[in-house]
Length: 253
Image (cartoon, rainbow, N blue to C red; front, side):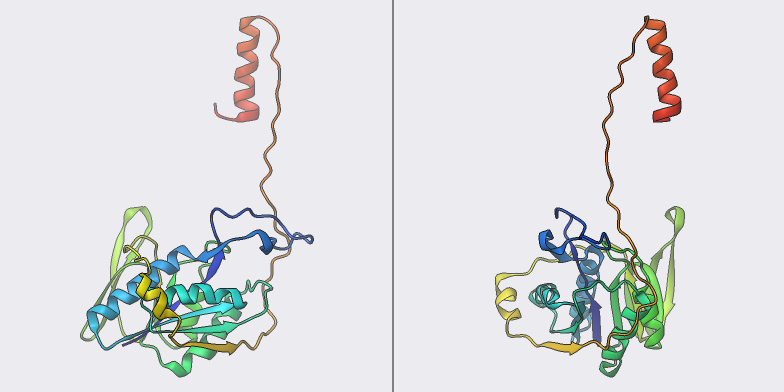
């Protein structure tokens, strides 16, 4: 079985986020990047499927500037057999349709049996790329997957629904799945894996950048303000002022 895993590099949760001069994106100079959380679970699920099936291959695929090779190497260190880097300019790609088209152009000749991706990215959170990619590749698709079971005639997946409900869906292969965080326990790369990752194949492909149909016009950061108000008067008057502030300003009553 041939399995592809889409991995995305996103700003780490501990990074200090500052906007660039135009206010259209973050200033990347002060950002520490890491693998997207749900992509990490997708990678682990792919490795577990490979281990259970045998005679299989896991390929880590990422798109972006040269810095994304770090997370591809991380995936290789965890056990993926090889990686594909679709090179793009540093300017952020925000169009899921364009991203899926670029992935499909590179991945279609590979003829993958299974494509796994995280449910959504931690930076943009659009949650569309895996679904659109499945359509471009002519695959059956499923989202919010929290469990997978390979069968002789296809694949069964457990999907998370609203209000704590779940459903099992039977699918044919090839298939594209978007993975929910928490369905497994991602492994850490071993020292042997880290050293071995340097020798594994990392294919470089230049993306044919087309005009995106969606773009970010402005990014805003959250501002917190402090304000101190002194309450004067008798106890009853102070209590009335507090109640009024709770109702109208703070809105907790």
